[in-house]
Image 1 (cartoon, helix red, strand yellow):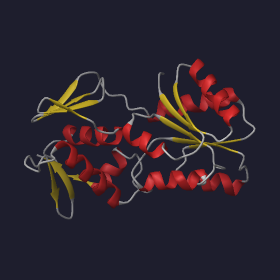
Image 2 (cartoon, one colour):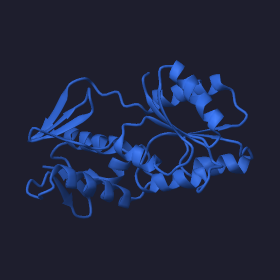
Image 3 (cartoon, one colour):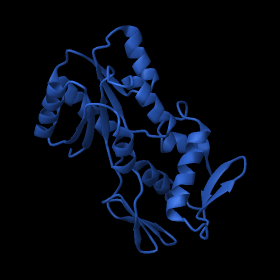
Length: 224
């Protein structure tokens, strides 16, 4: 599949084993022993999946994931944890997990679950380019140019702008965006949408002269 997977596991030997096993399956992996720089990687890189331990130094894994969700980061998460009580597993899902595997675990099962989640969550955009005014989204490379200049945007921002261009001149309600970009209208709040759109507007229109995305008060947003 060639997916990019971040693994957070504080047992170094186990981390290396998981990285080795996933690389044999064709995955690109980035391993961390703690969560210190994970948020930055998820914001800046096109990461397809996060494998998260819960017993970590500094912060409990599911609390970290819950914070990611509050910040609007929707990268799918598989917990890989020794916390195996029913209440632990329920807590993991309630805090933003997409799957939960308890230790000790079977590596083949982990790989099968990874592939299943990636099949469900990887957006299958057609090849080619999508444009609006001087915005050009390249769906094959998932890159953006504005007035001919490359602009770095996150995976979430790409998907958000894609949805706007596909529905240009239509007002998109926040509930619609939560359902179609975040894939969950119940877990996230309207503030999540507002923050993400403000970040996107700052990147594509830093001088505030083009007014690509307009707020329709009390309803949502539209691309003009």
